[in-house]
Image (tube, rainbow, N blue to C red; front, side, top):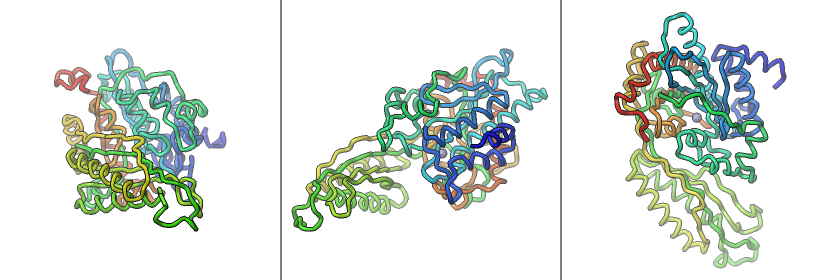
Length: 433
Ligand SMILES: [Zn+2]
């Protein structure tokens, strides 16, 4: 980004203008963004965000997996503890410009609005810090698992394991973060008493129901697998059909099987193979190896168990049928999660006091708030996505919906900051694992 643009960006305090400016970083021809985690584009977005934070008077800290924290200190009189908000700045390849970025930038704008109220004497914070965070590698596009930075922060994932994750080119996360200068050694000033995330819905429920805001009460679980079929490379011409051990044929049988299984579940199970790597990937060589990235998602653990058992047996059956060996190289299991019920109740009350008709709902997509919720009370708020489209340059949320989300976020943060940190412990939720 040219220096003049960068200086302009630092001065912006309007959410729409900030979204437009960040939408230019890694912009794709169709108006989406490609900002894979720890890529040069992600580095540019991080640099721009850090410059903005410093310019606006935030302290900045970067931790050992590149999670980026900007915080305001309300002073000792406010007591101790912190309220967090945020999301992620990384994206899918040619992904949407609101996914994640909206939560980070709305969090930043909300923090400014909260500080105004504190300065004007209209809010007396009882938590010392307000932290805006951008988590590393939420998307899981370049590095697996997804929700990587937030999972390290909440203790569910070991930092050294996360840093050793490798992308398709064999570049480790540690190397990639070092290259963009975000392999930090800092830490935020206090752990979260609350974490609040604002996100575009990535589904069409709010739009269908005509509601401006969703309060997420629970999340579907997910099982994600990287598996490989290994056959034998051979000439696609003379090799007799019966002698071929075609790894891509094995993969194709499984791909079709996953979809058929999910389609037959009446909406209870979602499943896809989103990525495939074929070797040697030549038009006239019987494929030697096919690596597949399989995802299964459902709202109940029993359905996930059944789906995983089906997957395992399908892999065996296909191996038998095609003469290919199979190996599950990586498995990630994200359990069905329920958000803190007090948080849901607080969010509902606050949002309704603004005259906004919110709905309590589930999320099928994973979010950093889920990783946080395992250890800290977290809230997840949704604004509508036009047509429910996401992970696509066609992703869109209307300006009015974005602004209403911001208004709700400001009100929720004010409410949480005004409450005492120890209120949480007295209700027996402190330190829950
Ligand atoms: Zn996201």
